[in-house]
Length: 236
Length: 236
DNA sequence: TCTCATAATATGTGCATACATAAAAAAAGC
DNA sequence: GCTTTTTTTATGTATGCACATATTATGAGA
Image 1 (cartoon, each protein chain N blue to C red):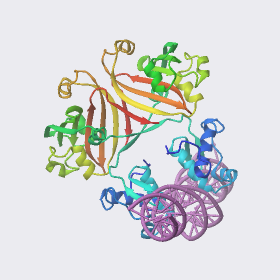
Image 2 (cartoon, helix red, strand yellow):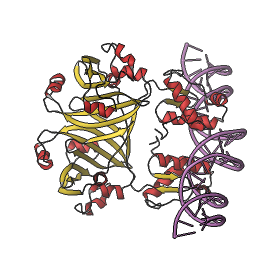
Image 3 (spheres, chains in turn blue, purple, brown, cyan):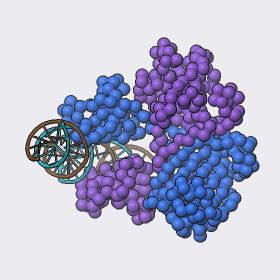
Image 4 (spheres, rainbow over the protein chains, first blue to last red):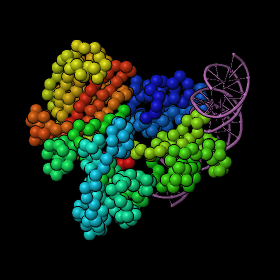
């Protein structure tokens, strides 16, 4: 979504806002075609380029659906989209004025479980680097991290001293752009995790799972469980 | 993010992709200014408009930060953004080929708790409509919903038969565009909720809280807790 | 030195125009 | 009737130009 909240009096934003008003007021009915760009340009007394910009913005926001020659339709269910910013843990902690720390619990080159290999589309028997770590906030447990790394995608990771730099930061710095999948869930703390986190066994932990790929190779699968009470907010 | 995955050979997308490559390759260093539009236009042999479009896209994706006269900088931490689609429960259930149902548990016009009124920026003593409901999936508990509605923002809601249409759907249909705040968390099931959901008391429930405003008036605060095991996925 | 007005500058936007492209509609061929 | 080709059409993109706007940089005046 854009920055503007108040309707703009002029420019393409005004046309965008007027379009949104018509969608809301059902003057442009859900699922129906709206007038084409040239027609709207004539109506608003502006260039087609300007109408295009406005309608494109509404399409990006999920209110309209546009197809060449097919015209522009009002989306049936204005599916609400929220863009949430995935926090970089160190930064999130320091932004709150707290002291960040990270404790490496274990680091092993293990044959990965079959279910994991299947999900990563890797050959059975492939060895992955398994790293467990605890992120601290003012010395208190903040996030428990369970990470699998694929050395065949990022061989350098085997040389990195993960006591010095967290796997996450190293990846952000050295494997710049990856695509992937983010899964949010709530899981109960296992006895082991509870002991590390200093919370009750079975406590509800907000959990973020990230699977990232570089080109066609899986890079890492990381599961981060936040201490009880954590809330992730965003504006919609 | 846009739809394109593969680099485009021509057009503004090609410039966008080349810019992204330079950011990744640190040819444009984090935090540093990049050449201004006119310069890049000369380099790529295209109009400034085209460069503008490309850089604007990169800025919207969170890689660049632009300011008039100030120029364009590479964002220091390319904070990863994920756009997640807030599911409309009925639709989500039906899309999975399951039967949707909704059971109204209670509906009362109550004086709201002070903490809530403060959060909604309402006068102490204001009465709000408090609705508890259970969304069913093939007859099984799926989502527990606790909702507060503000009749002074949407008076018509008092006349609506919530047995017939869920508050959510009525709002989507009749109070089309609202801005608000989305908060994700994990909470343990209270004994009452556990009984309704048919899960263990204390079970970890993925919880989505949505606070929406229409103009300056709060419309609704809804807390939806999903049955254990629910996962919300998105691509990043 | 400090404050305030002024100029310089990079991005933001609008317009007229042209052509590209995808997809639907119409026409042609069988 | 059916398939294939052609035309039509709405959106997508590019360009050159002009002017708006927000800030930074500069310089004048006290």
